Length: 253
Image (cartoon, rainbow, N blue to C red):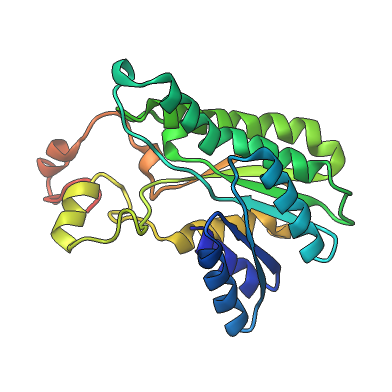
């Protein structure tokens, strides 16, 4: 999602600073953007190190010509554990890599010299921050906290001409969960109303929209990009649909 967003912003004419803990990965993305005619630089950052994160954002401001107009944070990792078996260390790790770093990053940008026009900050949350998931409690709590933090930042920073929103991805194809064969995809993701998983470009397009003038009156919101997943009720109505005249299909197909 980070790579796709960097490419999408570059295609729209932005000067992009690609930041990653893996320097080679950041450089590969930046170089591919430049090869395609875009403008990009790579920086290394460890978002779990406050001083390193702040220094990297300050360096990014310099690399961007002295002004950071848009910040998109796409960092996070989900651990799986029963609450009764979860250690305090695991809980703290989930909060650090899914919530705390965003507070540090967003605050750093907010304290920078204001841009001549509105600045935007976009956080990547998760549908798990809107609806709960079993064995995902620490991650879900962190993402729910992020959703609420965005609201608080929206109120406090509106006088600073900062718009801040979040995106809540649903099931998105990624290197960690690559596309499987069609039958496996249908079996695992059949409840998604759209019938398929989303792609990183879906998140990139949403991020660009929220940073653009088209979203100039949108702030403090969380946009679910999930194929309708969060619109579902708690029950699977496939058996009901199957019994309806003219249906013969299961939900999401």
